[in-house]
Image (tube, rainbow, N blue to C red):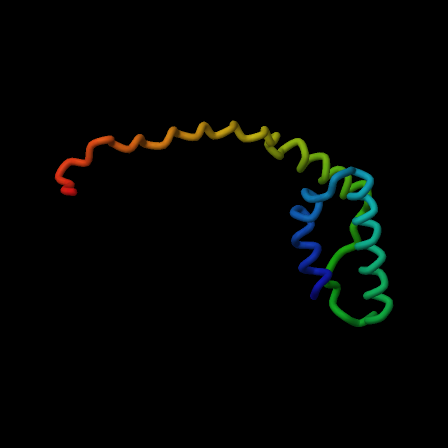
Amino acid sequence: VLLRKEYERRAETLAGLPTEQSAREYAEDFTARVHEDRRENPFQVLLAPAWDGDDAARQWRALRAAAPTQEPPAPVASQPRARRRWWFFGRRG
């Protein structure tokens, strides 16, 4: 079940990876865990497919191209503080 959920969230995971090589390594690690799960439970229903490293790299490039470039936010100009009146109307004292 965890592998299936991880496979469903692969786009978010790939978007967070810094390089194409790390995307390939992540896919290879995922595939190794899928194969290990299949060896441990041979009669279990197939929950997650194996994932090719080249396919992961292709998806990573597509996500990078589709992501908007992040520009640094413009500095917020602080507004000057309101000046205190030197004369307080209606004040006795």
